[in-house]
Structures are given as C-alpha cells and as structure tokens.
Length: 136
Image (cartoon, rainbow, N blue to C red):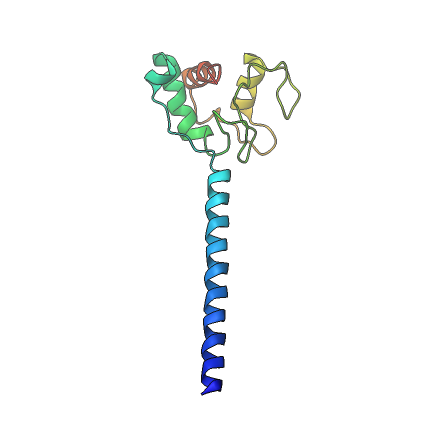
C-alpha cells in the first residue's frame, strides 16, 4: 500500500510541476505577444486628414511599399521605416539628402535591395506617392 501512495504522490508532483511550467510558459508567451505588438488600428484617410492626391499615394504605398517599409513606426521591416523621412536632413541608409529629387530617383531606379519602380509606376503615381510620403 505504501508503494501505491508513493507512486500516486510522485504522479501528483509531476503533474503539478507540468502545470506550473505550462502556466509560466503561457504567461511568458502572453507577455512577449503584448510587448512585441506594435500594431495599431489603421486610421482612415479622413482621420489622417489626407487630401485626394495623398490618399492616392497611400494606396500606392500600401500596394508597393508597405511590404518592406513601415509608414507609422520607427521600426523597419526589410527596408528602413519611412516615418518622418522628410523631417530628416539626410536619408537614413544612403546618407543622400532627404529631398524630393533624391527620393524620386530611389523610387524610379531602386537602391541596393530595393527594386526600381519606373516600369511599374507612372509619373503621376510617383508624384502621388511622394506627396503621401511627406505626410509620414
């Protein structure tokens, strides 16, 4: 009878430890998810105060740029964040002046790992995108 009691006690201790470990892992997972979460509700064009040209540029950004560049966060994805790109004197990676001419060149011709979009976007698309980038 004593061996049954010891065996039952050991099983109870093992299941208690497993429950504690599982609980700790769940708490850590929840904390990591919350801490890493930089997701905010996407604001509408009206909430951002975008005019029609800026709104058109935002659509282009969403379809062509967003997969590599964060618009409203300082964290980048594959490429650098574009938040405040024109609020700086120089572009973060290249050190080129942060002005319309340089940014248009990069959009059209690409740079390093970024492809050029001169065959994909029209001149009007690039202007709309540029106007939108000024809002970031």
